[in-house]
Image 1 (cartoon, helix red, strand yellow):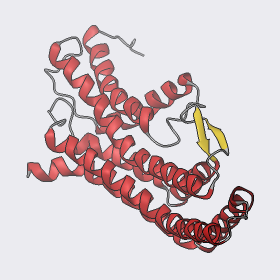
Image 2 (cartoon, rainbow, N blue to C red):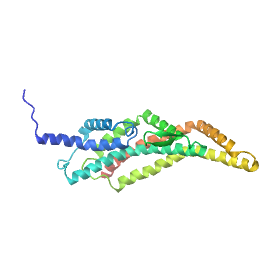
Image 3 (cartoon, rainbow, N blue to C red):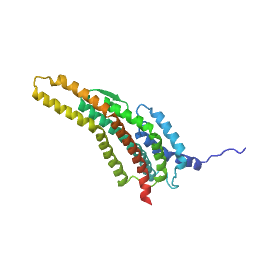
Image 4 (tube, rainbow, N blue to C red):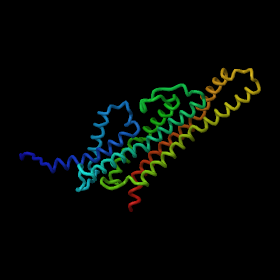
Length: 266
């Protein structure tokens, strides 16, 4: 049995093959839904990033002249992090839009004071915002969104090869335009409940003008809260359809983000 010998060239090649995918996967874990939760220890995230990068390393094509310890290598490293962050952020924005939709409904129906600590952001979030977020996470897992997002990440190593400039004006504009669209979708999810509660508030205003002796603060809050819950229960099917559409569109946007540069190259 011949002894196994290692030289500096082999070690450098192995480190390079693992270094570049680890950067992109690490950026992905910084922004992707569920994976970026603050409740997950940083050490676990590092282990998961390196393990996933090791599994995806056969898909990686590293230019032979790309050195880790060079100006070009530093620029490529920053770009790999940004690509990973962008892939995860495209879907994470959908969950932020759901939180925004829940907060809009909460403020309209008078539940703005009912808040919980959001472990993802480390800040207080309204109860309905948390509820919409939970609905979104369950929908995301039900449609295997985590697997589809990992598939988009793996595909990015083929369509966005390492060492080539990808973070350009079109790439950034696609992320920004999707961010504007996703918050518009979140507002549309909350719009039916907001309009219904606005009509209730207008009716209370008319009643108060007709009967000034009524205590608006005594009965108005109760009526608005009760009507808010009734509207949410009556529109739960439409709300879930909107959440499902938003999550599916976010996953499609992530797939288009990694496929668009390849399409433009042909």
